Amino acid sequence: MRTVTRRFVLPAVAALVASTAACGSGAGSAQGGAAASSTAASSGGRLSGTLTVFAAASLKKTFTEIGARFEKAHPGTKVAFSFAGSSDLVAQIQQGAPADVFASADERNMSKATADSLTSGAPVDFATNTLEIAVPPGNPAKVASLRDLARPGLKVVVCAPAVPCGGAAARVEAAAKVDLRPVSEEQSVTDVLGKVSAGEADAGLVYVTDVEGSGGSVQGIPFPEASAAVNTYPIAALRSSRNPALAAAFVQAVTGDPGQSVLAGAGFGKP
Image 1 (tube, helix red, strand yellow):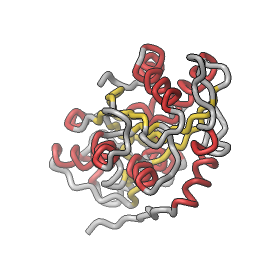
Image 2: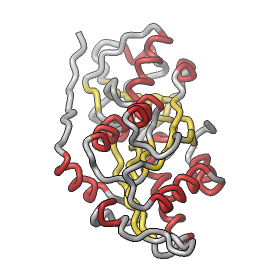
Image 3: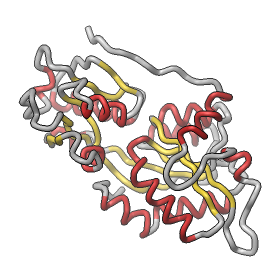
């Protein structure tokens, strides 16, 4: 029987609006969120106003950089981010949380948005990612393979099944015919990374890009079964955006050469 700690609580819309502001990072302030930000629209071809982007937690570093470049290329614009697990983000959007753009770490959660007609146009695939085993520096538990994660007594952390990284973990388990018994299932890949970095777990399943961007706080161990679970990342402007020109321009920035260069540098694959 799997013993896990489940922390997922679907927040109320009001709380989500507040948390959106709290989670904004890097490239811009989340002040006011999309509702207030989108009062300014493009005028005479010049973009202006604030954009609210809901993006998968695994995109935090790259999207923050893309956002900063976007603001520099378009003076007078601000990009505010809310980073979390894709399943959490799409649930917030479904409940009316203000956002202009959604970037998911898998197609399954994006399909929930398209099924509810929440996107403006078809989503565009912009990156791929695969899993890697993360262990604390020095690998004290001597983990060498995915099968090692099933050893009795080993403290393993993975993403919850509803989260893209959790779905990928389930697929690699099936491919390797391994039954993992994690001590905790997290709602975002950054939470898994944090537990391994803090020494609270002997190992965790995260994305290759998370290990790459960890700054040495974890050590990565590739495993062949990861090829059985390649996640494709789609992005879409949202129908509720009050600044559709700005939203479309940001989607273009991510899918075009500038964004693709940043993503490739962080280890993301081509879609």
